[in-house]
Length: 374
Image 1 (cartoon, rainbow, N blue to C red):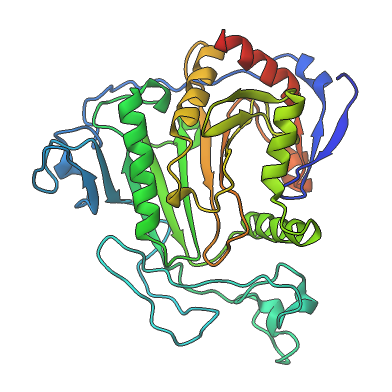
Image 2: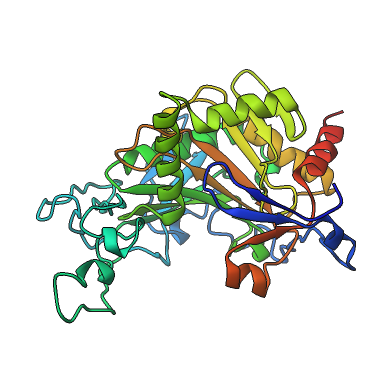
């Protein structure tokens, strides 16, 4: 591929411009790595430093033990600087219902609807409860600056007691244990409209501490990107008499093998057709399951993905990882995990137009990573 090309992501409908010629610019893309000047000294996520964090809400201790003491393999604490508060919200789908809360559970029990034609059809298909445009037909002076409490939960999931900066450096056992803890905490927040688990590795990717950890957000709304994917999956199922959108994409990716990196009994690893950045990866379970938290598949392939990136770039690159799972109440869905190494920077066009430019075609990236398997 040499000429620029526009591709549409099957899951979201969003466009990406593939412009391989721009990779020839000086410093077209380079892996960034953050130095940990302090090492383990003073790290609040290391075993033995439990007093430096808020009281834990969950931990795995194979040999037992008291909370907030050593002996854990993964540990979960409230974020010290939360983006969400514990103020109870009002369920948009059932106003007046009391939200369910419990220790270690979610304070968010709200769900923003995005159904076209429901109350806010004139405001657009993706208008949601709380949007001032929904009030424009019912009141002469809608409040265009409406706000509501950011109710929910924001947790830190420490992936391992050892001081390592990247998940690629974890043993197979530690890695599998970390993924199991992600799933356990997602299940604990099942009343939230959407539960987002993500990983930032490296200061340039948003990590404030160099000890490997994930973050969980129990949201009182369904993010627009997830709403788009949910609606497209449902529409595809209707048009194909029950077909699965991502399942059919995966079948075709395996057949073509142009963007397939690896496959095992549980999951496949691909570079998505409309990748938004170089070496973007997607772990897709072979069995079409709606919710990551209810599945047991994919941990081995996810670890393989992280290790392949580390092999390709002579060390773990800075990256972002996020779990895409079904929102509350959605059953027509297929979970996946996306990984985006921080190799380029979004500039004015990407931010202004909302269209990403990828300078390294996914077919080329997949071929490079397959070579690392040898």
